[in-house]
Image 1 (cartoon, rainbow, N blue to C red):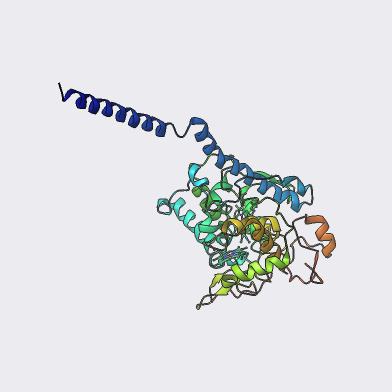
Image 2: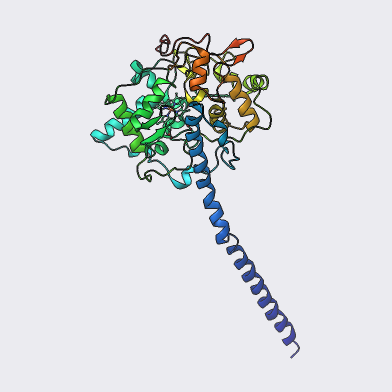
Length: 360
Ligand code: HEC
Ligand code: HEC
């Protein structure tokens, strides 16, 4: 009889312990409620919508209309490295390019995209490669990845005021970002680039604005972007690679290791990157390369600084800077504005004619 009470105590203790374990277990399992899970899933979608408006707005502002419409706050739009597109869509692995005629064209497109200087030289008027602005061979989210672009065309572009198919969209980057001459329609260079983009988009939904498309649109900065502060950000965070004169740096063999940000061998005054908001979004998400940690304000400031430097003329130049500015440049463009006593665009080298020094 005397040992019954301890036994009972032990039994009760076990029962209580079991109950506690069960309670803890249930509570842990129920931690992510369906509502919470839904919110988590919704986040990337919202980012996608955001990027869409960024892409659209580029066109709107270039045409000089209602550029201010799009400064609404865009939560989460600018978090570099945030799990985003990859959650929803991932392009196929490089090793999956098929070993057939189509695969050969895809490879050709990839080569052109990553080494445009070597493989599409005749259409390029500066020292850039497509992949300098569309990082990781056009695969990286928030770096205008090709897989997100492919299925969004044909689309209306305010920049040229008509519906563009994908080939024409690529021609646009040759003309402005590459400061070159667009390959003619049907040219193998275009077909190869289209094939590469199409292949990267394997399995992606058509006409769906995927998260990670374009560059993130940043909220308007607390303080107006400043050339002076931007100059300091550049010295502290960019000059190491892009050179203190912004002209990039070459490897020992003469190939370009770091691309120029301004000057005669960079993107021209008609390119998307010349717009301070577009450059700010790109920089916030992608620069400094491998350590994109600038604050929004720093990204805006340094974008303002690099886009207040002279670069090749806008190919749409009418003969007058002020007229060209009025016709084609919106609120985020420094073209035609006076910076340090100089009217930007006034001393621009002609578009499309940079002397070739890119070949070793
Ligand atoms: C100087 C930077 C730069 C270079 C170099 C460049 N691009 Fe672009 N590209 C841009 C910008 C800026 C946009 C507009 C992105 C946005 O609106 O969010 C863009 C947009 C695009 C788009 C449409 C993306 C979309 O989602 O609608 C495609 C396709 C494209 N570029 C292809 C190319 C190709 C091909 C090359 C090389 C021949 C190239 N780009 C070179 C900056 C560049
Ligand atoms: C560690 C070296 C490094 C640093 C630091 C760096 N970049 Fe870059 N940047 C690169 C490289 C490399 C590319 C081309 C990316 C590629 O081809 O994958 C690039 C591309 C760019 C481009 C698009 C191509 C062009 O020439 O216009 C811009 C704009 C740019 N960087 C701006 C900046 C700014 C602004 C900073 C400072 C906040 C910065 N970078 C810091 C290495 C760097």
